[in-house]
Length: 112
Image (cartoon, rainbow, N blue to C red; front, side, top):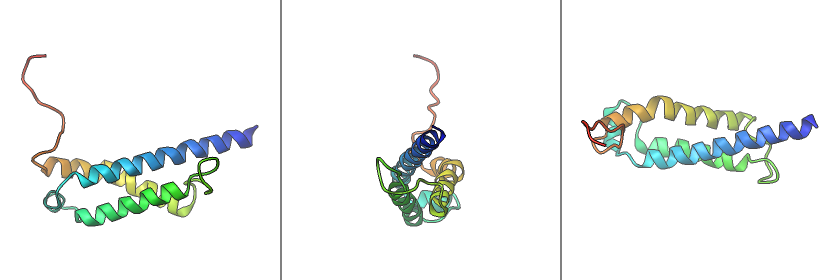
């Protein structure tokens, strides 16, 4: 009973990490390289590689019935979680603030 519950929890966490890594990869590709440089972060290419590797690790780590891995509880899985969380918490807000065409919170004055 507890084994199947643990398996379900690892499966759900692994799916969430994969979805977050793919989302971060797509989001990172939207910004220009100059936005990364002006925000004081590494290049766009480096972030795309880091997040791409995190997405691949998340995909490979999917446990059965979706994959053959053991979940993101291994060393590489945890490293991919850290990379994705760091992107969303530190890199993305600064890059979005530097990008002139970013779709941040709208600041309209009045109206519906």
